[in-house]
Length: 255
Image 1: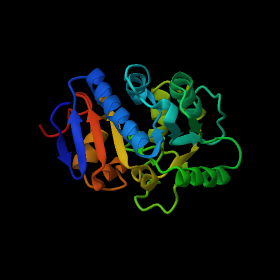
Image 2 (image 1 turned 60 degrees about the vertical axis):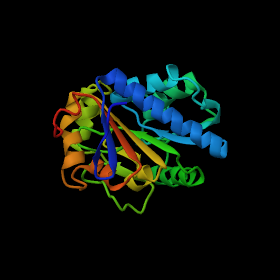
Image 3 (image 1 turned 45 degrees about the vertical axis):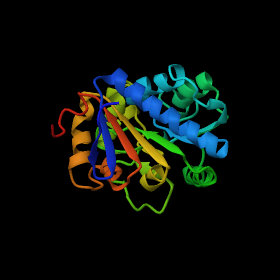
C-alpha cells in the first residue's frame, strides 16, 4: 500500500486509483477476518451498502484468496422503514445478492424494515451485543454520514446501538442520484440504523471512500471540526480506523 497519513487517530491511505483502493481494502479486511478466525474460530463483520462499496465488495468476494467466509457472520448497518427483503433498493437485498449468495458465509443477520421498527431496533441491538464485531467496513455519505447517522440525528455518545431516524434531504437525494429510487418522493423518510458508537466499537474499522462527490465530506471528516455536523469526523476519535481513498475522493486534502 501507499504510505499512510494520520488525521487524529485515523490512518489514511490515498491509492493510485479505485482498483488499487479496493484491492488494498479487501486485502486488509481479509487479513482481519483471518486473524479473528484464528483467534476465536469466527469473524463477525459488518458491511456498508451503496454504490461506493461495489468494487471493494467485488474484490473481497471474488478476487481475494483465503477469505474465511465459512467462519464469518455477516451484519449490515441500516434499512429503510417499510422496505422488505426483496425491494430493489433495500439493503438486505444488496447484502444478500452481493455477499451472501456469492460467498456463502456461516450466517447473515439482516436489519428488517417491515414490522415494528422499535422492536426491530431492540432485536438487532441484542444480536450485536451477542456477536461483538471484529470488523466494520463502512463508507462516508455525501452529507458526511456513517450508516444513516445524518448530521441532524448523529450522536457520538448515543445510548442506543440501533435506532429509528428521519433521513435528511441530502441523504435522500443521494439515494435518487445513485439510481436507487426514481424521485425524492419515492425515497422513504425514515430508516433503522446502527448508531455511531456501535459502528466504532468494532475491533477494526475500515472506511472505503471512492469518487469525487465524496471529496468535500472526506475533507470535512479528516480536517474539519470533530462534530456531528460531519458525522464521519468521529473516525478521528479512535485509533483503530483506516480510511482508504483514491485521487478523486482525496483531492481536497492537504498535499
